[in-house]
Image 1 (cartoon, rainbow, N blue to C red):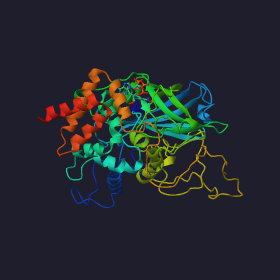
Image 2: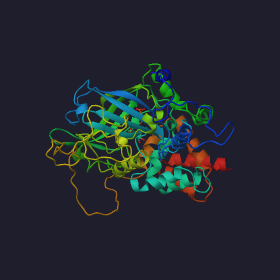
Image 3: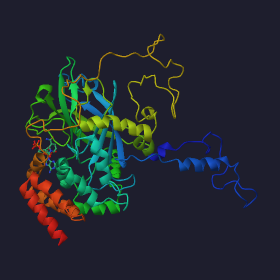
Image 4: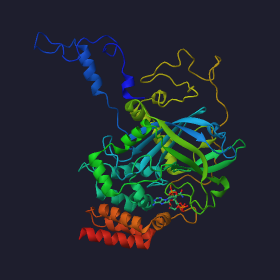
Length: 489
Ligand code: NDP
């Protein structure tokens, strides 16, 4: 649908629907006199304008979105009882919001940053949100570190800019970030477009089948457009000449009927493997090597419809990793557990307590039946229905069947951590990633890292950061150290 199709007929009105006589001149006391308080059309217009912006997302502020269709291509019912995955050929409507992480709403698209890949499935059992990224891992593995991490990515309280000192101080002191940082400064750190990159659920999630058996899964969305990236130089130029490059590319490709698609795969681990697997399978800084758990193709995601109003559908869209449907649930991944709280909390603050009921957020094929009522911008959808349960008036009742299977737990409470699996170190997979890169990509990776690390001013920070890469791979560390020294002169 084009923008012209949205033109409405009839006169301009106030918010209350009364005709507006003059939208060019304020009402004054006499010709050229002071403006009158009785010009309510003026006051209403200025007051509304002052409130056009809602709080910006603290992370993932800059986003672009599109609607699409998910189609099942493989029978997965032996692993999950989720109805939207129940038969080959079944289709589910989706909304996908892409984003950068650190930049503000008005920042450029072509930057080195992970991309959010937040996908809402409007299933018949309610909305299932898979709030992923374009990288399979993350910088940290415990949500308690997230606010500190983001503070280092955002603007310094004194300088008002992102500071190399803060970024590298945190990463150097958080060696678990080495894998994600290696990925980010490699070629895939700046995708050419949102269509030419993969998406990942990143966390491990629980699937459970009709018999109550549990499986751990990881999701992969492999781009059918092929991977295409920008070099640092190309990205710097594009950010200047076309800051909206990714948003525009997505919208225009859908407008011309060139619908981007992704092949959806899962890696599946039987529950019993988790305790003895070589890595902690719930550690967000690690992948499951494909040789251990081969990806299985289960579906196709196609984006085929643009939002018609960016504010209503992209800015006010909300996604929560806690939005599960029967047959799918959380794992003990500590980052995921923190996100189960933090996303809903952010939406309640940013969009309001009735955010779930906005058109882009509400379920399509079912309705939300709760006894929650009222709050800011409540639309009265429950009309006069009783607002408590149990009740004798035919109100909605519980199902007695949890969405996911309970998890056995042992031990005592506390925050102590210890390696629980044989290869639980912070460097092994960063080294694997480095070694799978071509010689050319290794060179670009080292140059990209050196260009940023060489901006560090405080003694010890750069050295500690380089040492993490040395632990991942000796050659990596040696080349990086030499490149940083060369730049520092
Ligand atoms: P595999 O050879 O089985 O898998 C390699 C994976 O790495 C493929 O998914 C491939 O994606 C991706 N890849 C290839 N080149 C690059 C690159 N230059 N930058 C980032 N990703 C790349 O090996 P493993 O499963 O043992 O993984 C090795 C490393 O690959 C990991 O340490 C991880 O960093 C990275 N990786 C692993 C993934 C996983 O789920 N196992 C997923 C993505 C990355 P594609 O097929 O699209 O080219």
